[in-house]
Amino acid sequence: MRVLAINDISCVGKCSLTTSLPIISACGVECSVLPTAILSTHTGGFTGYTFHDLTSEIPDILAHWKSLGLKFDYICSGYLGSIDQIEMVKKVKDELLKEDGKFIVDPVMGDGGRLYAGFTDAFIEKMRDLCRLADYILPNVTEACYLADVPYPLTKDNAEACLKKLQKLCPQAMITGVVDGTDITVWYTDEQGETQTYAHKNVEGFFHGAGDVFASAFIGALARGKSEKTAIALASDFVAASIRRTAVEVPDKRYGLNFEAEIYPLLEKLNG
Ligand code: PXL
Image 1 (cartoon, rainbow, N blue to C red):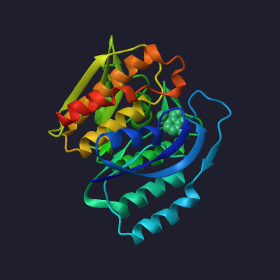
Image 2: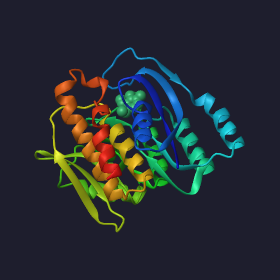
Image 3: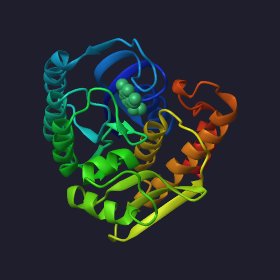
Image 4: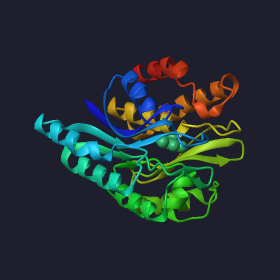
């Protein structure tokens, strides 16, 4: 079983590959990486960060992998720095995903109702095309609103309508982080096509990297053979526990979640 995580390396501020690698590995699954860019920190809340685009390196990496005959059971994409990189991910999926493999797209573009630095309408349109090729998509509320072209934010009254629009892009669509009163909820479509929700008590505040931690645990659990429903529950419980801990333990939330301390309980459930 081999997962390929396509994402950036934000050297400090846990997100992208610094969450995918430890979490997917801890789940007991081999995680290979295709780094899209290297940044000194992520772009959410820090200023003065460095950004080195790795697009030009990728064709040679792919050529080498093809010469080795490599194929992946799961390919998941996260933060992509340009439209060219979206095209590159399509090529990787076409050439390196096993025939019965799964392609998971976390359409990382924004949070809190706003796009991250550098994202444009043209990028959103291309991200919709990438979502059309996916087996699962995992947007947060902001990304769901941009992809489905509905007003931000979502509540329990309009989340299902947004989910239905996303299903036209990808039948197994999800929306993470829908706040409903005192709860925070994942909305998703189950394998029978029914809308389902999975909720936790919301913790006030903005927790950087939560979406990446959720996506990593979801993929790890799927790759361990769990159903979509179980993988969503395990990943949500893991993120919620990490957020509760981070709220009291980590003064500067830009540095990401303390998910490390919650890995053992995740594994107990995964192996139980
Ligand atoms: O957590 C999502 C993310 C990933 N990668 C980079 C980011 C962000 C969010 O700000 O800036 C580089």
